[in-house]
Length: 348
Image 1 (cartoon, rainbow, N blue to C red):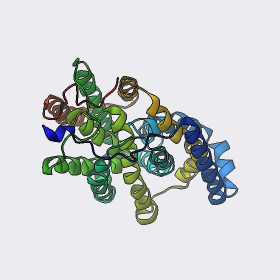
Image 2: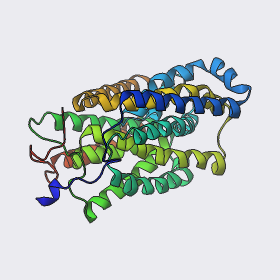
Image 3: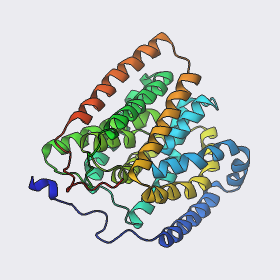
């Protein structure tokens, strides 16, 4: 039982910085990003912000979700782009990777600077395999998967996470760990596998690394959602930037339209994503869970209402539901990592 009382170091042994420090740091970072946006975009930056205002408006909400939850801003962008704006899923995926490189990248810097607690060991053991997963998925798997299958399968994935969270949070008196309670070969293997699979999902949708690893951290390892959320934001950044560069420099499949969408959204996410990360750090664990459940419900409802469901799509979705649902249920039933009330690092 001694391993359960071990508390590894967080980002810093010092207390998180104050709201004043957060505001000052995020304003400076946003100003630098805006300056680079004007330089890189030249005369097109302001033009695309005006022409593609619907994209910028979408990312007002999407960036705060990306910086403050495990859902990822790309999940919001992918859903709205493909279901409401009727943008091709490949373009929606490329945009998600590109804009998250800015938004979740700045949110990650904010998390690290403000010393918001994260589980550092998950960054290495899930982050490095995620890069390999993104590379494999982008080059060899994504071209083989029909876009409609990608949309519905991702919806089923996050829906099963929502169901498992509901079941897990109905258990009265069960605590949460502030860090991984033990860290042996088994835990490393689980994180490596989750990171790799999350990278493949990110290559298909533009997001997903955060959702897959969040599922493992919360459902299996019983880590507090307040710790797991900022950890997965940083992890998603580690997968997003290589994914963006793969499509930009290697696959070269960025269309002029996606470039315009990206320029329109940059000034918005530079503010929204770090703000979402800061706001999340002040929310209670249950508030974070409720927000995630709300976003998952929106994703599920929008897919059912707006995505054509053929027989083949239905069969694939059912298979995804069976596999993901079984894994989520099994992880939520494992008791090895449930802390005693005295050892729990969770706060409601």
